[in-house]
Image 1 (spheres, rainbow, N blue to C red):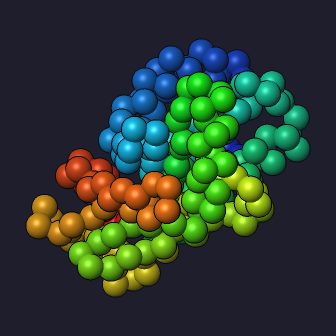
Image 2 (cartoon, helix red, strand yellow):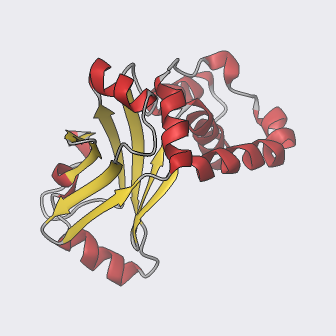
Length: 193
């Protein structure tokens, strides 16, 4: 998947005028790409549409207008674009109550090492950014890569309903295996095409 280029990023005034329309489009895209894994965990599989939206929203929220700042945001968020034979995901721990969330993040220390994609008998462990590791807790947001490789990527592209694809968490304090619905498999198969 191609990275986001500078000429794709709208200037603030143009983005503001188009924002409602663009957000409607990205919300529809995210709906196809989100997986509720557990009551407190969801995963969003990233693509160019989701990443470009994140860049625009960050530039808007932080009021970044300098060319250097814009290029920095593009470079930062381009890390979420999946490479060839790879999926990219952002996993969220979603607990509204701050005290409960903090307690749960401590309980889930090391969660990053217990994530992956199960497909037809093969487990692909998620790669995570070691810069975000904390010694005594996990974080509420995880940026992950799933390196499928050419053979598994091809199997994914050809996947039909009889092929089991699931998100797996095998942490001692949270163990879950959530099957991908057909619409998510189709969206990710398109990413891998």
